Length: 217
Image 1 (cartoon, rainbow, N blue to C red):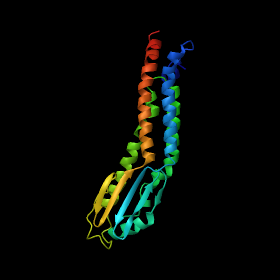
Image 2 (cartoon, rainbow, N blue to C red):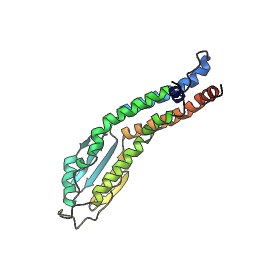
Image 3 (cartoon, rainbow, N blue to C red):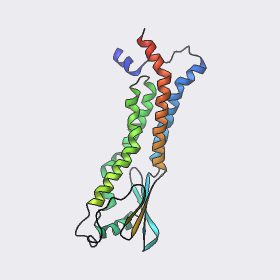
Image 4 (cartoon, rainbow, N blue to C red):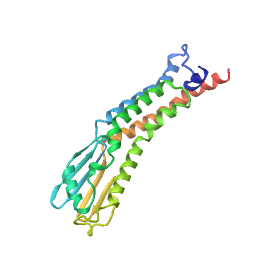
């Protein structure tokens, strides 16, 4: 029991005045808001790429959610076939299949952090802080892998050198131009990280004195 108590930390004194109790509630509010924001992001697009080609004056779009690709995926795959790039759907299959469960677990960990009043709260919240950065890193590595490993037997393989598609901003591949941009789901994931970091700051201010007081008794 002592180990468990040392892990979760002291409880809020029942006789604390309302003005003081609010500082203990603030981390809870911030962590709870972070969990809700991250959960909502599941249903919104994280990333989008628009491909501009002479034969498609309106452009072609692929929209990335955490668990699926939507938009003009088949048309873009058809164009990529000529330069030897693999179909987009072959990228990050494991990540997409596990994404909903993984984000659900992250949300539960954030909510569990509400009950931890020691420095170990970081263990529950750090994965969610890192999540949007890991999403971008994973996307970059897949796009790099696809762009640098073109099929040499493709019809236009001799005309296109290996390349790394940008995950943000404009890129040019032969006669095609790509425009990559972050979408609202990813911004919500970053907002989650910000809320957690602010929550950790307020958590330390509120509970560190209680932890020190209890350890000195």
